[in-house]
Length: 410
Image (cartoon, rainbow, N blue to C red; front, side, top):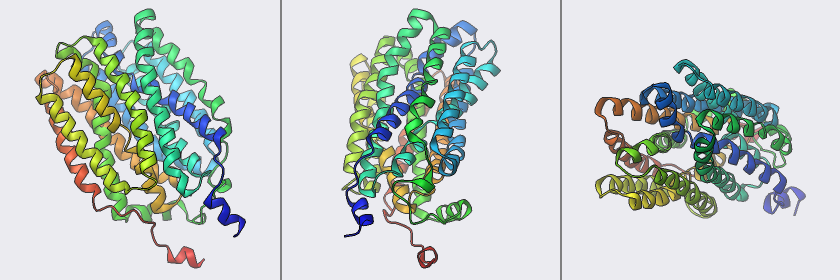
């Protein structure tokens, strides 16, 4: 058996790279998942309304999504560390500007544009692409689950941390402390140096250009279905992340249940992400995704139709946590299976851009419709309908590599 065959069969796990990447997703996903706790303190202090804050968070999600394929392309060509350096700078600058925002425009630029770009440059797409370049195809689903679970752990940890900082120091100083923490990202990123051309697991598709990769992906029916389905994921999770604390307050439940609820989502998200990564090694990823979206719709319907209390909030949060980012390992795994790892940062980023367009709409609609109807019910029901749509659209997706006769001949 050749050395190359042995490498693809059972390479050792690059644990330094995996641990560093997991710590980065822990940091970058933590503060942005706790943005909901800053909504009421900021608008109460500044005299703004929920739609003002909602627009800032919607912009954050939009720029996160728009930046993802761009930063992914840069990481593919010039290396992950350069992109992660930009992540730390953008993220810290955005949180500091948000902390001292005296007008909505500063909130929108800081908490919206800059934080969004910071998350884009340090989010799953960048980290998981780096992982994929250093592990075998058989190991990808598992390491994708580890990276996603680390982000979930950040959500679990930063929910109580953020509320504690707000209660002790006020919302402005709390944002400053979170901004300082983001400056650790470039240091942690040092082991992730390198790009697609010097990958430990080289892609046989190395000669394909960016334009060829985009043309191939955008004409691939399964890729388009996957992209449309991930839009729904973004709509659902961003709406809950941003508006859940305010919703809990509206239904008369103590605000601390929102903290515990988001912490439970983060904790059970760890289990869900790891489970999805593990199952994705042996089970159909499209069918897994269809089941996740179906269960989300059933769960949301039960939550808003049944009597609501602190207990129901915690039950909803725990189950939703299992389904939260369990979509990420199979989604990224499908992109890698279809197209390989040479342009995974770019193509995975394009799928994630769809996710963030959904996030923008979910967050923006949450604030806008609340201002119109003084209720979030319309957005909850739209989330249910979209979840059923996503479940259906994943069923025809084919989990196979694209055929490239021309490249194979070359």
